[in-house]
Image (cartoon, rainbow, N blue to C red; front, side):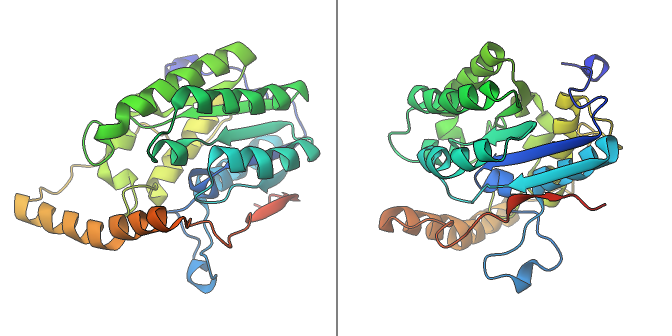
Length: 271
């Protein structure tokens, strides 16, 4: 969809909105810390969902917002732990993104995962809620390249689910600006604050919510990096992020162990 084809907002004419965000670290906002993040045992993150809630409050007026997402969660955990709570809250709008952590593990089956997503979507849509789904970014380089075919199959399924159930789709696959390294945190797995800001604008576009700024604004020219500097950065990344991530996988631990939802209740968005 081009920017000229932004749909009429399903939020148009509303004076209040109950919004629930469901998912993993992507939706929790990891990579986009609040100023007080260092004072929290597990960090305190803003992310695209908080940013979108701010935009929605400017458009709607009164927004109750809950964010149930927890980093590291697999799709089965999201369905078991977050979906029932989301249904209890009776939201008008739900953003749902899960399955990426499963696909990063050996044996992740994109078709089986899509069936789980559709199970959730069917229940959410039955309540009358508007549902937003997401594809991921099309990485042609880097450590994700080896798995991109599996992810692409999953995203094709997500598009089909969105069409079948009348969901809104934020198609990151087409958002080429998000492939820029500046859109990503140093861990190369989570978005940077600027990446989260742009994605929030992409969600606004998908829902027809007016917002200042453009997700597709061109990046300024990047400083050239020589081969040796780039390899040193790769080594720092491997030591600082890849090795600990592999260690958690091998020992059955998760970055989300002992982490709880940052916003478990529908609470007003204060602007």
